[in-house]
Length: 160
Image (cartoon, rainbow, N blue to C red; front, side, top):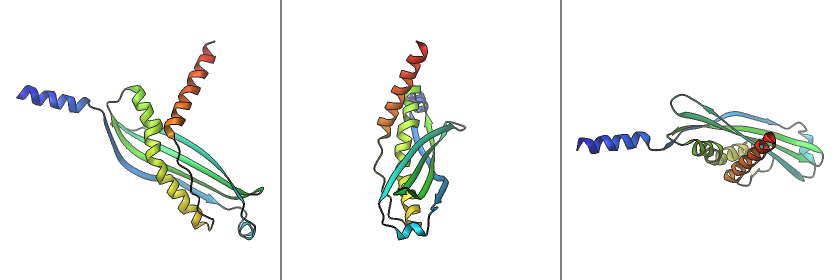
């Protein structure tokens, strides 16, 4: 019986673990440089979105992942507003191999953070008295795969 208990404890200690600890806004900004004049113009917006992620290892298998969404909306040639959110999360991630850890930090965690960042941006924009900004979902798995492929191509070009 003791051997079975020890085996169960050892398996628990080496089993992969993932746990969301906290989601929070790390930084938030909004600028409407042409207000109030922009509100008196015909509204024909064009939206530019920049998306970025970064991660940092913390103590004891904790990791911070930060998803940054920067939106620039122009009405014609004029900037109507610029909004940016850094949505962050603290995740406990333990006992993953290097490839799984990279995928978890580069795609899985941003997938969790994106709906929060999208809602925060939408709320911020409507508080600025602009129409709701409903960003389309983002496929972080595809973006991660593209980044891996780009890194492999860069590595192959460097070797030559």
